[in-house]
Length: 316
Image (cartoon, rainbow, N blue to C red; front, side):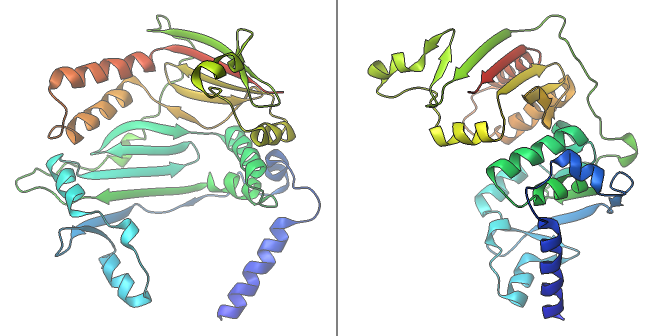
């Protein structure tokens, strides 16, 4: 049975690899029949972290602990265990559960049922991301075939942490309330800050700003700030990347390659406030001095989220 499975996987890999140069992600979308109607939505999965005799936290899925799987298959799953120090930290911070939802619109993150900034995408941005991954990590077109299909797989994972003594359980996200996507905000009426900057790289990987080369700073600093290895410049040229732009708007952080969008980080004021609240809770018992410091962090985060920033990088 194992031999048949391996043989089947090899056949699939050969079929995926194909012959000649790999097609673009757009061509793959056109040639894979039925991809836009394919849907695989799995039920919500609950991963429960439990404390073992050492004070560590180990995950349990369907009641089966990681330590039991280790004994069954003689594998090391220490990477998914949480040391005792961090388990105490998590409980004292009242971080009860984290939920990740994956679907055709992105990867959404909820902490204690509250939405936080998330990764947003669509067919076009995922296709471009697959093209870029293929450039730097060649896989005979596997990324271009696999990533568009992954958009049609729905996955909802809740990671439940142990509760501190006396803590009141916080309910999970209401699945009927939706995912709280951001509302597009193409322009910011009154930006907290404005940045418009263009950077140009040469074949040596040396950047220039306003016509001034970073080489001018080399004698003073002992190195050329911002310099990239020429091999990266060559890879970008081979991929046809002439321009990369980074932009912030009221609804997130956006990245473009040759004016085409990649998946972006999306947020609203509520998402950002929730992220700061989580930061404050996780650091309430550490070195953070007082509420004024947290308020300063909150103000900086909200100002960044309401800034009009555009950085354009040109490549040879």
